[in-house]
Amino acid sequence: VFSSRIQPGQQANRLSQAVDRLRRAGRPILNLAQSNPTACGLQPDGLLASLQDPAIGRYEADCRGAWRSRLALAGRLGCDPERLFLTASTSEAYSWLFKLLCDPGDAVLVPKPGYPLFDYLAGLENVEARPYRLEYRHPQGWQIDTDQLTAAAAQPRVKAIVLIHPNNPTGSFVSQAERDFILYLASRHGLAIIADEVFLAYPLETREAPLSFATAESGLVFSLNGLSKLLCLPQLKLGWIQLAGDPAVVAEALPRLELIADTYLSVGAAPMHALPQLLPQVEAFTSGLRQRLQANLATVRRIFDQAGSPFRLLRCEGGWTALLEVPRYLPEEELALALLEQAGLLVHPGYFFDCERDGLLALSLIVPPDEFAAGCQRLRAWFDDHGRE
Ligand SMILES: Cc1ncc(COP(=O)(O)O)c(C=O)c1O
Image (cartoon, rainbow, N blue to C red; front, top):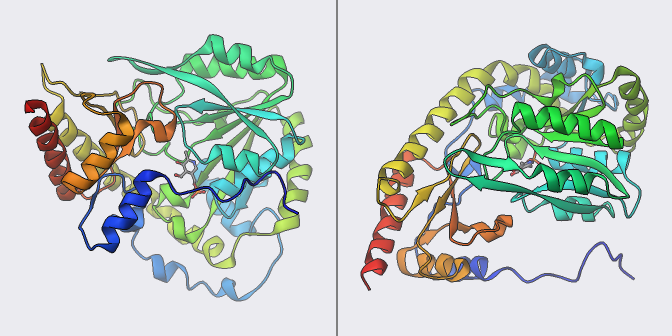
């Protein structure tokens, strides 16, 4: 009866099973993997007031999203409001773009390590998410394996290159040189570029000033962003797609995307009309959160990354996650389970994100700094104890 897109109920992984068990037993857990900003005390001012706009009472079916909301957004982004589509989330934006670009059985190239939702987002559209490698060199940081990407882009049925700029969890931006190369590669094979820029406002240890792909003037480029990271409002459900590239190709894409958007009309009036009131806060809000991210990154460095330390903090150019290389006393999954059971600490192991190397832990930098520092100290103490055994 059921579609092959969805495999029969997958079991929760061992780590989430253990978390459930400990929570039911009333054991406190310090969550160093907390990526939900609403659980970290992060919220822009005036949220409730922004949801009181009288326009919320009217239903106006504009498939790209309310004009004045797009106008406000276009003013911020410096683009034509006609090139913007509001969506219910960035995840939904992906599903629209996969529908726009791919037939069943087509493929999109996605970075690895990367954000685990892609297999599902693509799979639900009958599209294959094919990984391309990012490799790490210390202390320079992550870079795209361009030989491998070149070979992957030439394969049949590939329709788009997905770039996460900066990537989650590696924190790496696409460099200027990589950007030029990828724009060339995409034009050579007629591929679209989907640039997920949800963390663009959070540069940390960057090599170059971050530049949005929405400035591209060739090919077909979709830049994605939304309120869930920009203003820490995942519960509001508002994202957007900005089209860029060759105007002739963009003009062909617009009516097609309109048809998809018109079929769903999924954006709620409340977040859509709140947008013009919320946008003026972006600078102050993101700069406040950047300070928290910087402070937490400095804490990791202070506690783990001194000369001669068996730990290593990987270069974190931006975003909300730090990757910490730890001594390999145990395989990653066993390590995460031991930290949970013995130290009451929840951390995500690197294999959750398809990291090639073993012994990486992903720490969420949005955790309140006091809690984050306490968690890091406890993590260090656990390793110091086990190193002595
Ligand atoms: C890189 C990246 N893109 C998109 C999303 C999802 O964003 P949204 O809440 O707008 O669907 C996430 C969420 O963690 C993410 O890490």
